[in-house]
Length: 304
Image 1 (tube, rainbow, N blue to C red):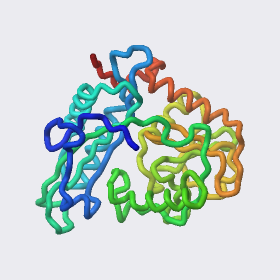
Image 2 (cartoon, rainbow, N blue to C red):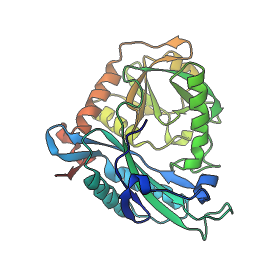
Image 3 (spheres, one colour):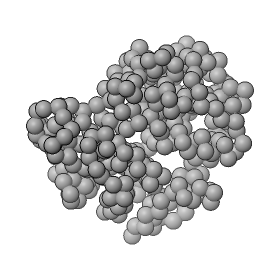
Image 4 (tube, rainbow, N blue to C red):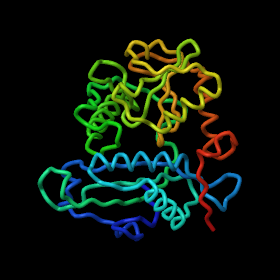
C-alpha cells in the first residue's frame, strides 16, 4: 500500500491526488509514449523548516531531454519551478520520492509523436528503502537490454520499461531480489532500474555510456565522489564472469541509492565491502547536506 502525497500537479494546476485521473483512451497508456523522472526528497536533519532535494537541476534537465524524444519542448527551468511548488504545497515530513511524467495525452489511436497533444504531471509518495540496504541477491536475466538504435535509451522512456518489468518478475519469481541485464553484445549492462558497479583490486569499474545504459544521475554522483576520494575509476565493457570474482558489487539509483550485492546466481560475494561502504556513507552525508564540498548538489526548499 503506497502513501501518496496529497497534492499532485495535473493539467496545469495543483489538485488533490485523488482527482488527478486520465482517460482509458490516453495515447501514452497504449503506446508507452511517455517519459518520467524520479528524485528523492528529505526533511533536513539539521533544520526541519526545509526540505532537501538531491541534484534537482540534473533531474530536471534529463527529463527535459527525455521530452525532446517525444517531440515535446518542456524546459528544465519550468520543470524545476513546478517541482519546487509541488514540494512547498505538500510539505512532507518523511523521506519521499517525486515522479514527474511527460506523456502524449491525446485520445487518438495512431502511434505517432507529431500533431498530438502532450502534457506533464507530478505526484509523489513516501519512500524508504527500495531494496534491502544490507545487500541483495541477483540473477542474470534471460532478457536483454534494448539497443540505442531501436530506443532512445538516454531518456527514461516509459515503454522501454517492459524489459525491466519482465526481468524483475523473472528474478523475484525465481528466488532473487533483482536482475542484471546484459546488452546485445553480451556485456553487463545494468539492473532493472539501477546502474551497476564492481570493484576489483581497489579499482571501481562500471559499464560506459556506450554500453546501452541509462545515464544515471546517482551513477554520475558515485563516479565523481570516487574520483574525489582518490579511488581509481574505469568505465569499460564488463564480462559476466567478472561479476562472479569481483571483490565488491553494488547497484546505484535514485530509489536504490547504493545497494550492495551479496550474491549473483550461485556465487557468494565478499561480505567485507570497504569501498562500497565508503561511497555509501559519503552519498548519505551529501544528500543530508552534511558535506560542504557538494553543497551545489543539494537544493534547499524552505517550508513552514
